[in-house]
Length: 523
Image 1 (cartoon, rainbow, N blue to C red):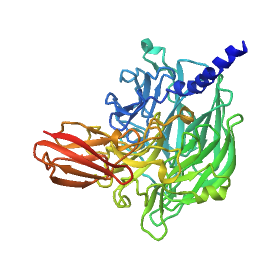
Image 2: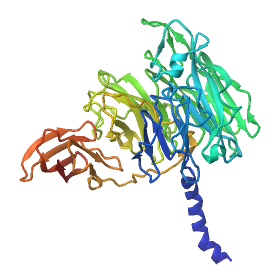
Image 3: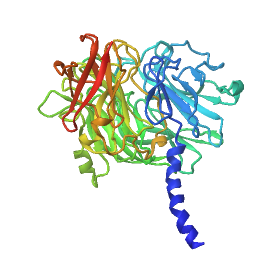
């Protein structure tokens, strides 16, 4: 018996470690923007154009936790089933109505149910009156709410039953768009309870220093519990009017032990980090990481050791802003953690993001862990040099410190012109889905893994590397080996429009990985 146990124990331990990775498939599908999407079924993002949803910011999707099959998705107002049809009871709003902030919506499974889900949605309120324009016209709220009124959000919820409508799912008749609470900021997330069944819904008031946590258990949504901790959200005077600090994301670490809160203010606001007890719902150990301007997106790394925040703080003695700041939470003291807070983009010799990026042309709004273990940044840009709307920020190795995290702009061929605003956020997921998931890129990364597509092509090719390499320079040689063009890359696209039809060779250079050659056909 002992010999038998010695033989099967390693196998059992391996399988026990593997199960969490296999089970977390709720985030397999992402739908966002103007009918855009990703399918992570095979571990890497494949473009999915099946979505029927229009949104700029707020969006959520839910996939089957075991199979990864798409169940439904929403822009915080309407709900679509897996066949991309609006659910029968999703009729309150026009097709183009969408949630106007990144965390407009959140899906939470109903405890101990295999078919029921809560869909929570935030609705803007101005001067205590629901803001119809922000609730129902395609668009988003400005990054700063400026004016003399009062701005806040109310929280509503619906229950979706996947057994309704012949198994396609629908909103339960008497559980549709029900009011829960109000006077909230634009923060909405949830953390699984340590009992493995229940959830904690986490909110923050619009003006003040109070969090609200709601226990979601088998008997329903419990009344909010107020906890006063952290910095105060205020209506601050400025030269252009009163500034309302209601925007910015809240994210829990994937292990549910920490919370980080971004508060958007062009004048700067403390970056708040807390401990969270998922057994009691208690928020404690407030730490002020210092004033950061224009905070919007925030996320932890999959292994919980790094923290990322969008930042427009200027770097000392330069006119450059940080764009994305990383903190190393694995360091032993708070002072060391704070000292580690540096831009992963500026002065990074390994990135393709131009030093000219912002304040001229590019903004990264939100940051999201994906099923491939990478972090994706949604944003906006106006040209190829500084990033267009088909370009995304990708952090290939988010568990690594500093420039080793592998940050770059990568182009995805959504088929929509850069001149069209596509998306400023990705789906808002419960972060436990990504706890300790491995990166699909692995540890070794070479230029030989680089893929060039489409090939043949009429106008451009895209350089794709699942391990995160984005080369900086490309020389284009004709069939006789003569140099016909050279390009410095600020995205993953190589422009071939000026070339005559024929066969060419791309000489692709990375300062740290050397060179590789790829043949392309120009049609």
